[in-house]
Image (cartoon, rainbow, N blue to C red; front, side, top):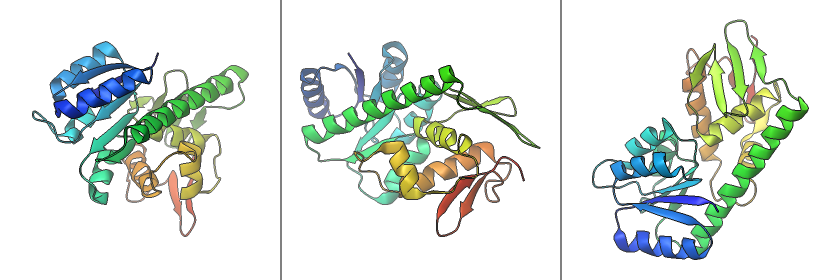
Length: 239
């Protein structure tokens, strides 16, 4: 049984979601403020976190960052904010997907199911690659060493651990196992999400910007994740 954590201060909304998703077969816990959400995220270890961006004790952006410090669970933001800037802010903070209120219960159930399927699929692919030793997940560079630990879903740059979201890790895994290949935004979005996501390719730009901040010496002049103008992005480990 998959576990869901709902962090939402609207009692009617959270109880309605919990009732519906429990009937869908999920194990559900509710937190009505950020601190309780952090405590439950540690003790309950959810498979997916549903997070409202407006909470009484802390901002959703701050909570996203704190959750990301210890949890790899995909975060689905549920918010009344509909502006593109709000979506970008949530993604930059560590969220993996975004859905605007109001929404149908069937829609959010479909979103959660899609996130879980993708997570399962990538975990199986990673295990298959690791067991078959089909890919060298360590890349040595003149100035840095990139190491992907598929079992722990961790990235190390020059032996230092770099915190990443689920989506960021998958983009790096795709880049490193296809070094030099140019990916369009649409290709990255398809590889990352599949056809069942409503996230636009603008999310890819946000994830790339976040990765550059984490692995590049100078994110404004990236050496490893390079822009191919008019096409997309590619990863190059050697200059």
